[in-house]
Image (tube, rainbow, N blue to C red; front, side, top):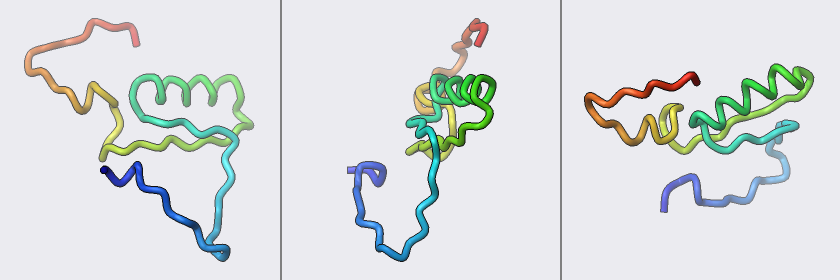
Length: 73
């Protein structure tokens, strides 16, 4: 089981920060969602949770040498 799946109980004295939106995953959809949220609802706060050490989603975890994407994203 990876660390992201472990639930812990937060002590009552611990500071809890509030966010309007929780984005799960820093792949292309999560990053795109954050971008559009920032553009369309600039007054909303958000946080992106990612289990990997970096952003990129499957483009980060599945690397294929020599493969390129011709995407407008």
